[in-house]
Length: 224
Image (cartoon, rainbow, N blue to C red; front, top):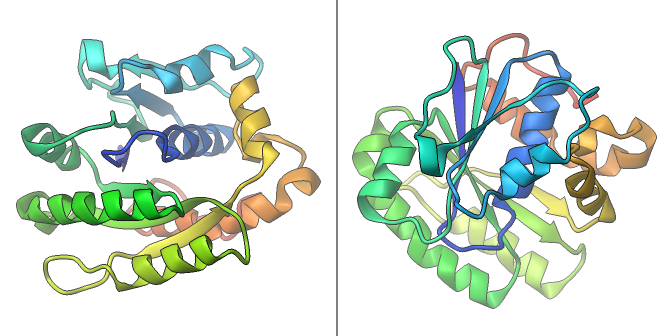
């Protein structure tokens, strides 16, 4: 089983968007996927409740209430973390993960909040040093804006405790495709390819990075 933690202490940054689209992608490839919602607001489970029964199955877990206990035959565990996570709770979740994805928004407020949070995450040195891989993803980016350029520059310069930079994987554009997918309990990978091709292209580096962490099966060359 491979586990991916979607993490940021600030609410509204797009954690559930990343979590649900990853869950939908791997389910569409025939993997046994568990989507663990650690937030009492249960946004990920609400997405799953809207999912049609004729779609590839995804198992939902109310982890904030029942704990994080995925079935033994799980291929991919996707963990949607709560906001305002700190201290021991943060360390415990990071230790459960093989890979950590941190979505960030291109606004001055979010960049300042990210500075504090990424510093705190870096302090969870033991968990990261045990092989947990960490990367950032810019979310809801509007191309050719000052805010977008500023966020990409910031992410390219932020470092881990060992001096290595946080990998910056992708900038996901702001598009109605994610809104429609959320309403229907789908991922963008379950729409017609022609409709979501620009969005799928932006996920290529994310999926390759996750596959290099030792995912089951063949590493995807391109999200189909």
